[in-house]
Image 1 (cartoon, rainbow, N blue to C red):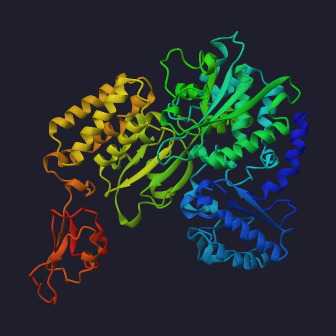
Image 2: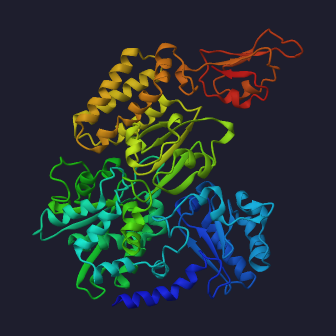
Image 3: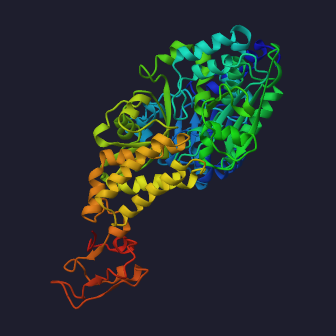
Length: 632
């Protein structure tokens, strides 16, 4: 592809097809497009078999020339996979089973009558079928980073071009100076989406200007997404890999770099495969390599696979790993903008940050800055999980409240339970209690209440979660993932974990709580890198908002949520027990036996649990249909 005009010609040709998936009326050679999620979540639920069966049925009914099947990225509602959406009407089939395909093809794709019992229930009303954008999950979202996920075939570069792909790169190479590109990103207010929130344009400016005579510079992408429950970057790479390549090339032009590296964890096989395909295709069409758009600008990208070390999400540890060394952080300063990869000036941003860049270039800094809050511009992608109805991927404008995310987009807490807290930022973040549900979500507000944005994990907790146990879970993760280079993190986090473990076993004291808090503050202040500096956050936030639970564990030897096994006991209420023996049959420890007591109106002796033999597995409670067994 030699010129920007060549690119626009391909876009105009492809846009008509892709537009059918967004607009109800579009000029397409196909009558319908059937989009099926090919991301990790839906693939694990069997979407590949659904696609295979769909293609067989379309051929049987002679519809292959009228219906196009498109394997896309994530639609967002991961709890409902496999997902299939039929355009132009945007009918949303959820939890699609291979055995349902025959009816969908025959009744809907051939005869034009959607099969209502297979549709996502929130789209089916007494007045007809709602468009998916009218549902509670989607209507408050605004997709920028995720704009192509679930819309295009991520393995087809022309479909990306059909959605204005690579036009931003063409624009900067043919009509903007390096400084103008950097200023555009600065004016947009885009901050790093990997957790720190550092202004992206400022990072680029430093990389360009700190060492102006540097012979080599690098652009790196952090795709080493390691937070438990987080899958934002993975979904972008699986659904829209070219957007990252384009953004990295723009960054390369802006700072004067010719080589980029994407550091992606090997546990993301679909993302790795699609990145590999995208890089090959980008080279084939001239979007990577030599003399891009005939401007004399050279830029290429290579992949580097990570082995899954959480610490390699830290920028200097990531670069050390790319260099072929053990992934350990380096002291800063010097910062990567001065001495980064191979000791050369380097820009490092994460996947979501890059996914915003082309749209900022095409639509202008003011467009992006108009979204969000005063100090946190644009949108943010969250992986919504835990005790929530609509688990999945959401992208919301900065400033949206936690209540809107949980009660409207997320569909609320299942089973009539009460919201207790939301854990944001993974092992580096903290817990937001119910009293702060109406706080607008942005970088500064979350830090102000003891949490942080992090990369975008958002785990919802209800009344059945023990906050001491939650803090212990995240700290155990950090202990395992510490690289061991600095003493505060290597030793301090382990001592913190030991105190938490002691408390959850009912062996803690009030002095232990004070010691834990002091240790948290020491580790936070003295660790070498962000992993150790933020490791105490889950503990400090739970101490701040749920200190009463810690006190209950150490003073009353009781877990209020009934989670910590060492503090639990099970008891059979004799007057409710009918003596059926089902609980005894379920007990793996043979801890349940008959008594001599027969309750009034009952025929068989009641049973009792031996506390010395009971392993506290809870199997008896789950089996009893009469509510005769209680957890204390």
